[in-house]
Length: 254
Image (cartoon, rainbow, N blue to C red):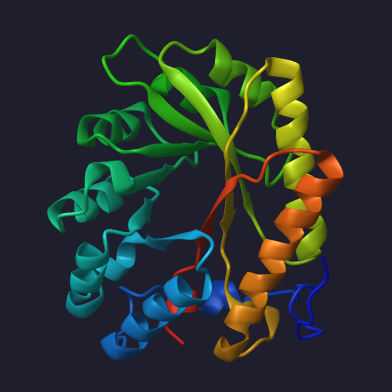
């Protein structure tokens, strides 16, 4: 299936310099109305996907109220993010923990908080999450930088861990459609090698501004992602996974 989208949607431009210079939501005085509108726009545009939001938006009253009312998921990357989500009243099962060389103590806090999903990018994180516990932990393997086969094997071998899908940050140089199709092919490969069916596809850092698009192009990007997932599933003969979209912090402030 093909869709007409703006020509600059998928060829990502280099944004490293802009991201380095750009402050986070909590570093500057941000117009809460803008953040609230962007949160709603993402949820409306990605009707066929779930949308999760960075924990920083919970520091703003109106967006935090909106998130609680709609019961959407929150992405956290450290102990502060976990504490912010819990104190804001986010349902623990809707907390998504993104590992990045986290200390074991931070992972323990996430476990104690009852976080619903964990995105891992190292064997150390997998080891810290594994254990004999009453509730199994749902794991997505980050395939942004390298083949995730080794991590998938570690997750499957880990006690109390369920491999539910893969995550990828869409960065400069990626072809969006190709990246999504590659993820579907990877999921299919994992399913065959390990006799599992990972059912979730997670796409991070989705920001139209970084792709030189206007906010009005968001719906076109959503349709393009849907098409890429469908094309990838047809090509790989794999059932369509659930999709999660995670806008970057900057995406919600402009």
